[in-house]
Image (cartoon, rainbow, N blue to C red; front, side):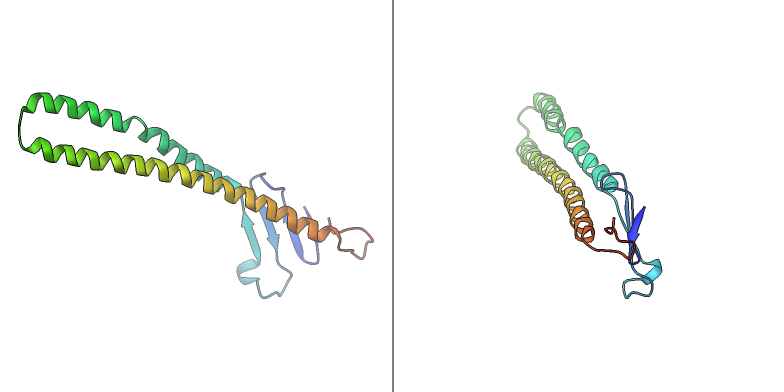
Length: 138
């Protein structure tokens, strides 16, 4: 833990959490003045989105296999035309969901990278600040 001028930083980027404490009596100190963020929740959510992509992968094939058996047993029923349209709709939705989840996972990981870069930029900004002890802020 290190700090200067009422700002306390606990932890390092990507270690699961950061805490920034505002100076006492500052305008940003509603409810204790701590700002907490962590890459952990973002990375877990990204992993969950990746799992959805994986789990939805075989669904299209399973849907096709189920429809093959149905078509063979149904003969020339008029409902097959409507059933085929419904199947096509579901296939589009499944592929759309897979694409959206994959995109979301990448965006969540980008948030973590952005947080780490912002943390480093803030730390670098404090590095040049001289304290009464004669050293840098960190």
